[in-house]
Amino acid sequence: MKIEYLKEFVVLAKYLNFSTAAEHLYISQPVLSRHIAALENELRVKLLHRNTQKVSLTEAGMLFNQRVQILLQKYNDLCEEVRLKEQGFDAELRIGLPYYCMDYYMGQVPIRFATEHPNIMLTYINGHPDQLVDLLIMGKLDVLLIAYASFHDTEELVLHDLFDEQLIVLFPLNHPLAGRKSVALSDLAQETFLAVESNISPFIWKYIQSLCLKNGFEPRGLIKFKHLESAIIALQNNQGIIVEGYNVYSLRQEALSAVPLVGEGCFRRVSIVHKRDTPNPALPLLIDKFKDVMSSGS
Image 1 (tube, rainbow, N blue to C red):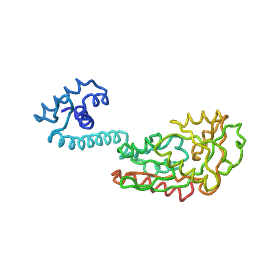
Image 2 (image 1 turned 180 degrees about the vertical axis):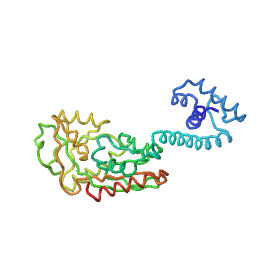
Image 3 (image 1 turned 90 degrees about the vertical axis):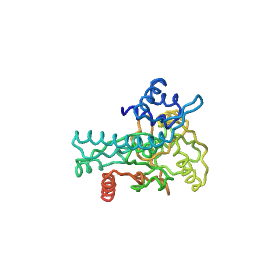
Image 4 (image 1 turned 120 degrees about the vertical axis):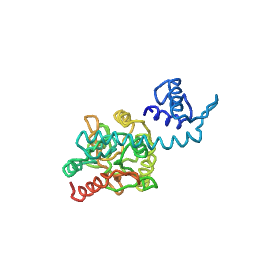
């Protein structure tokens, strides 16, 4: 019984459509049909009901799908364990980080953690916050570091607050406020805001709106972009300003000015997030190391 055939069956069981499943597997529909038929012949069991309109799982197919997913997870875990052993490690922690956040969010943690736990490999995956949350829920990350105003414990996810990250404002160099040591929210009353579009951005925007209202004005407007790079190009073309966390301070360049935003509430909380049922025994060690580094002020 081929592992690839089992993986293909799980994908087919998810979509219940040969054409869609084949597309996601990057194989042709006839090839997928042959593989599933070979699987049924080997098992001597019918796994699918087929007709011209749809595909559905038989009772045996539903049981097989449930158990095969468990089997494939154990197989993947075993492969990962063997790979780590070959490299001299006992465990791995997969850490998700938003773009541009590695140095600012992690600080001295990787160095100190590696010194105290040389048998645990830390691997890093960068992405947009939405992508990272999805990867965490799917089990492709063990933990992620993330910052935004409205995010709380859920039945599935747990947060550990780390520190407050100051907000900064990115201006084009020719902007009247560029180059200041700091700006207040009231200084931004006539500005158009630029932001990256995501499932998280509505919470951020509502938070910024609430801060503006507390300072006596309503923002003129918001222009959304799919990527931060696109928003920065718009900023350079004087289409608006960007309010972000201090982690993007490194993006300042010849064409940008990064100015701290001061005043009550002008920060966002950075937290470690993980699934409530995460089985990785190395996770508590990482959380403890973060708390240790934060308490020492390093």
